[in-house]
Each structure stands twice: as structure tokens, then as C-alpha cells.
Image (cartoon, rainbow, N blue to C red; front, top):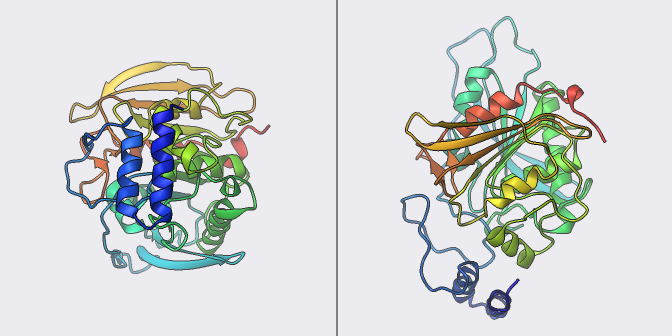
Length: 361
């Protein structure tokens, strides 16, 4: 870590303590740009407000929650898009839940559950709109849970993936998210062998944390533009990992036992592309293929066969892509609509795996 970066981060800390949040934000941004005053180009062409200090992820606009969407099937269970609140060990979290309509002759058939973790300053409704995961889940009969970080917990609604107390089983946010997942799975009669978690940026980092902490709950993991478990232990180390990338697995980190699929743009200026590869550190690459989305966005897909102590994996390197959900909708924030459809590919990958097939340490 160079002295300029450290100096600017120390300046940001002092400015935050004195209440000068805007000036602190500028210092953080200069640190991430290596001291330059030039503004980085955004991967998404839209105007967004200036974030406050403490943002270590994307910005997003607020989208109002959708209304319940009834199904024309009067004999089965209607489709739902609803809000909820859950409490566990003194912590409370809001969430939104998508439940596709059930057929009249299979109202209680156990269905898969996907947990989707948003990025900083995003919310559940925004993330659902941007990823279009509900559209794909409707086709496949999958329940989708969108936990929402509270602003009282983090000023910019970031998941605290970079703090050690939120990187361990039965503690902090991992414990809360795992308990929420199990609560919804029981409430909705979900298939416990087909529960998955995915996220974007800070949400992607937290998804990898959950994969390490709860291999008995999540059958597969999806990380888009995120970082590996253990990549940081505080905000300063988080910013450094985001800026330079983690060249290899963090010290002491174990392989993710579950199957995992990773997407990362190689033009991402918010979370360095090396972080995506670090998530798969130690895995042996297999088949490599080149392709492009229908709109011409190129990608390289690398398959990693399962090995001792770890499930199979896929890595999608998104060429010339920035910090945005590939193939998402412009109705949500930080999406790249012309990219390969990450939501469809994640769901395809998830549904090919069950918890009872996952290798264990």
C-alpha cells in the first residue's frame, strides 16, 4: 500500500470525525484513483448523487416496492411480491419476497429458493428490477428472497463483509441472513437441498462469506463483481482490496466447498477484476470458451471441475464491462443490459446442483 493512498485515507478519517462528509468522500475517491483529481468514467450512463463517506460499493437510485402480482390461476396459489420483516438475536431486517404461482395440482411441492444480496445504497426492489431475477424465477418456479440492509446498520446500506465480526458463522450479519433464509424456507415449504445465494459487489462478497460460513444451508453460490471471503478486515483494507485486487486466496482462507459461479467485468474500476479470480484460487481450470451476448458483448467462460474439498465452478470474464450486473434491466441501478444474462446463467448453474451433492472438507 503506497504512502499517498494511506495519507489520503487518514485524511478521510479525520474529515469524517469532524463531520465534513463531502470532503471525506472526495479524499476517498482520490485515494482510489491514486491521487488523481480526475473523475472516473461511470460504467452506466446515468446521473447519480454524490455518496457520503463510508461508501465502499456502488450508488443506486431508490425504486418503490412493487405490488403483489396476482396469478390468473384461481385453483393454485397466486403469485406474490411482498414485503416482510424478520428478527433474530436482537437484529431486525426487512426483506422482499417473490413467490411464483403454483399449479393447482402442486400447491405445496417444495421449490428452490434463491437469496439475492444487493450492493451498497441499493434496495430490494431496485435490485430485483435491475437483475430481472423474478422474471427468470417465474419461468422456473423458483422463490426469490431479497434481504435489505438497514441504513441504521450502515449509512449507505452496505453489507459489512469487510469486518471480521461479520465473516463468521453464528455471528453478525451471516447469522442473521442464514436465520432469515431458514425462516423463509420453512414458511414457503422450500426444498432445503436447493437453497442458493448470490449478490452484487458488497452483496457478492457477503454471498461468498455465507458460502464459507454455512455450507450446510447453501447448495451453490453466485458472485457478481465481488470479493473473496477474508479479503479485508476493516474499511481501509477493503478499499485497498477493491482498488488493487486480491492476487491470491486471502491468508488462512479455505476453498468454498459448494459449487460457485463468478462474473466480473475486466474494466471494473470499483472492484478490481483480480478479486473474481481470487474467489477461485486453487481451483484447476478446465474448458475455456469465448462467446458474446446477443448484443455483441464479449466474454470468456472458464469451467473448473469439482476437486477434493470443493465443488465445480464457472468464471465469466466480461470483456470491457464495468461495475454492473450483466444482462440486467435499465429499470434498476448499475446494470449492463447488453451483456450476457447473468441472472439466467446463475439460475441455470444453481438448479444443476443440490446440497446433498456438495463436497465437504
